[in-house]
Amino acid sequence: MAEIATIARPYAEALFQASGSDLAGTGAWLGSVAAIAGNTELLSFADNPNATPEQVLGVIAGAYGQPLPPQANNFLSALLENGRFTALPEIARQFRALANAQSGSSDAVVYSAFPIDDAALGNISGALEKRFGRKLQLTVQQDPSLIGGIRVVVGDEVLDTSVKARLEQMKVALAAA
Image 1 (cartoon, helix red, strand yellow):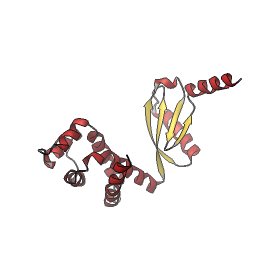
Image 2 (cartoon, helix red, strand yellow):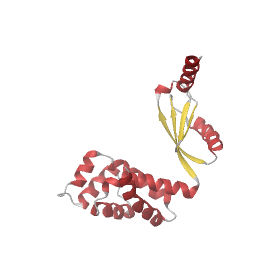
Image 3 (cartoon, helix red, strand yellow):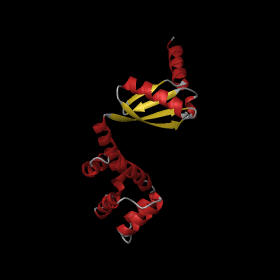
Image 4 (cartoon, helix red, strand yellow):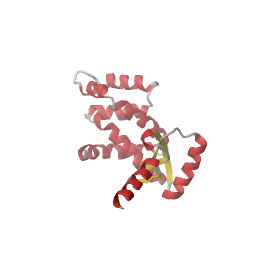
């Protein structure tokens, strides 16, 4: 894993610098294309010596649903020509970390047993930003095993107020008694 991170770092930094003031736009297409690049069939196709970079870009553009921005085409062409296409998901992760560091924010994943509406998410966002002391980019994922409450992961920090966690705490307390 460290090897992929090492390979991805200069690409992420170069893309970050080339993006200038359009970090949000670059982050949007990069995240989408990285998700597409995670497809094992596409990775196999990209690794095929008979497939040209133009063919791979055509498949990506088709999956993207609209023409790729010129910056995306240039960047992906460089990755394909240098045999670094498999590093794209890690490049996207490192790019996002650089963009977050510049803006002073962090990515956060909120796990919830039930769907969270926008109003409730706004309230949760405010409370979490106050708790963690920085702006958060929230994504929500459902996890029915939590039973109730939420579990928030921000980097290596975890705030778990789920029913499942409280039941585990009660179990430990009762076993120790």
